[in-house]
Image (tube, rainbow, N blue to C red; front, top):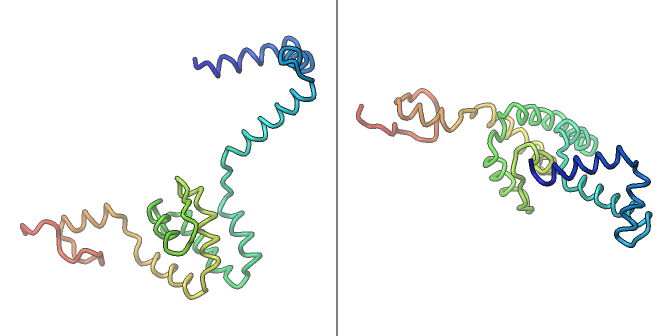
Length: 172
């Protein structure tokens, strides 16, 4: 068991045994401080802990706000949101990073697609309707994964429209 876990258990036991008031009074006595100062420190610790946990808003919440600001682009933003959820638009984190690098001046990209969603859709809302429609049409036609592209090229399947024009294995 980790020391933090053990400490948390012991503090809980102390809370159960003595109660919050007596425990804060004892801490105040030990620290040579006031009970109010101890309670203030606890509140600050709790608020900083809750702020440090990144709360990723759902795409639906993001889209709802953006549509209220840009009602003209509602249809396109909703369609892209569905595609983003289904991973048919910007399916991988590196795609998200490339998209944001192209359009956004903010380079602080998240470590997951989910946490980058607000940044992606904020950027999308700034694009024109024609650009949004272009993303809708290109995402619908190009939904092959990298693995699918490579396997088709290795197997020599030319019927699919991929970026590589010749099979990787030319032995026939």
